[in-house]
Length: 524
Image (cartoon, rainbow, N blue to C red; front, top):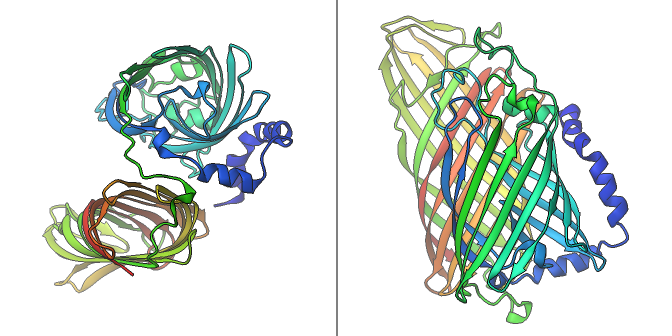
C-alpha cells in the first residue's frame, strides 16, 4: 500500500487518537494485566440468540434489506455492566471502565450499505458500494444519569479511504425485567466516506445523473434499545433507529430519501452450553499435530482479461459462461496444524483445480494482442493452485474458547490459456504471486466434544505492479469421536482479484471459490 493510502487511513483518526492517549494513559492497565482479564472471559456469561434486522435503503430505487443472523448477547445492556467484551448495536467491542466512570474501547462492525438487488435506471452504471469491515477506538463517560460516547471508525482494507465519527448521549433505564435506553447522536462522515457511498464520478455521470461530490456531512440520529426478560433463560430484545440525512447526502442524484430507518428484533436463550472457561480447568487438548483431509464442493467463478502490448484493455472472458468450464467441482483439500505450545501454532492448507472448455464464438473477441473473429472455435484450460502457510498467536486459549491473530502467506498460482487450435494462436494469462495476509481465528468448545470455529484472512495491495485483494473465510463445526479422530462440516470462501501490467499477467484475474466442505481429521 502506498504511503498516501496509509496516511489517508491514519489522518482522520489522529485527533481522537491523541485525545485517547492523553486521557487514558494514567489509567490503562499494563499489557499483562489486560491480557489476563481478556483470558478470564467466561462465555457462559453470555447468551446465544437469533436476530432479524430490517434496514431502509436510501438510494433511488434501492432495495430495503431484511436478514437474519446468529449473535452473542448479554441479558444486561452494556451501559449497565462493566464487562470487557460487549456486543452493542451491531458492534463487537473490547473495553475498559475506570473507577471514576471513564470508558475506553476498541470496536469492530460490518458496514452493509449497498444497492441491494436493484435494477433502478438511476443506479445503472454506478459502482455499488461493497460491504466493509470498520474498526475504531472510542471514549465515554458514565457517572451521570446521561452517558456520552464518542466513537471513530475507519475501514482498514481501503475500500473507501474515509472515516466517520459519532457523538451520542443516552439515558439508560433499568427495571426488574429488562432495560430501556433512548439515545440521540450526531454522525459525522468525512468527504472520502460520503464520496464512496453517495458520490457520482465523471465516468458514472449521464445526462440525467450529473457528477456529484458530496463533501463531509453530519447526520442526526435517534435510537431506542430495549430488552425484556421472558422467564429465567430467555431474553427478547430490539432496537429502532431513525437517521436524518444531511443535505450533502440528500442532494446526491443517486439518493432518494431524506432519512433512513432500521429495526432489529432478537431472541436469546441462556442454556450454559459452553465448557468451563476457568484457566484452572486444566490445559486444552494435548495433541500437537492435526492433519485433515476434506472434500470441498467448490462453486467456481473465474474471469480473466488481457491488455494489448500497448496497454489497451481486452474483452472480459468468463471461463464458465463463455467456455463452459465446470462451475461446480469436488476438490480434495488438505490442512495441517502444528501446535508448538499452548499459545503458538503453525498452520498450512492446499487445494488444486484443473478445468477446460471450448466454444465457437458468435462475436469477435480481443484477448491480449490476439483478435479472434466471429465463428472461431476456441479452447480454454485453467489451472488453479492455492497453498497457504501461517503463524498464529492465541490471545486466549482455554477449555472453552480460542482467539488467535494470524500472519502468513497465500501462494496463489493461476494459469489460463485461450487458444484457436486451427489458427495456432493462443494467449496465456499467468498469476504466480505470494500474497501476505493477516487474519483472525475464533473457536468455541461446546458440550459433547463439539467445536465451532471461524477463520478470516485478508490482503489488500496497491503497490508496484499489482493492485487487488484476497479474501478467505472459513467456518466449521467439528466433533471429536475418539481421542485422535475428528470429523466435521464447514463452508469455505476464497476470492482473489488482481490487476497487473507485468508481462505474465498483463491484465486482471478474478477468481472465486465457495462451497461446503466435509473433512476427517487425525490428531497425535
